[in-house]
Image (cartoon, rainbow, N blue to C red; front, side):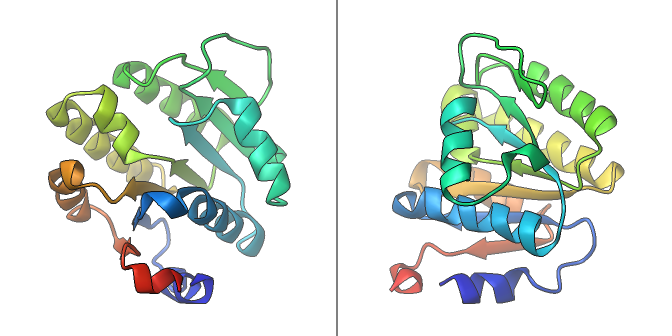
Length: 185
């Protein structure tokens, strides 16, 4: 599976925006692979927008996957308490797309990441109205393009988000749909 994904990711244009659609049961494995691809193979730092897992849990998972969390700046939208951690902003909710957008702009200016990883389009749509989610996604992609930053957006296969994925597919440079169960055999 990973060799096929690597082939799909090779030869992307500079500052590409990639939408990866995955089955829910492979969410964590694919996320780790994508991060490893962008960081280890391409020798790049990045920013990680976490909509599903709190910072501490995510860092533990990355460490188990042998991914250097120190090369990432995190925007944690899950943790309810704010901690003094130099490489993380804590937003406390997935519902404030305005605060997320402001945090992303700040991170792009101060940290200068070479890529931004958005860990779940589905979580955005779960906590926000469909139109607001689409508007945020367009703004997210526009910010990345203006700042010459690669983007990785993960979407989990779900019939409820078909329209959202269709909408985003139009503005991404590459869509990698690995929802076919044969892909993971």
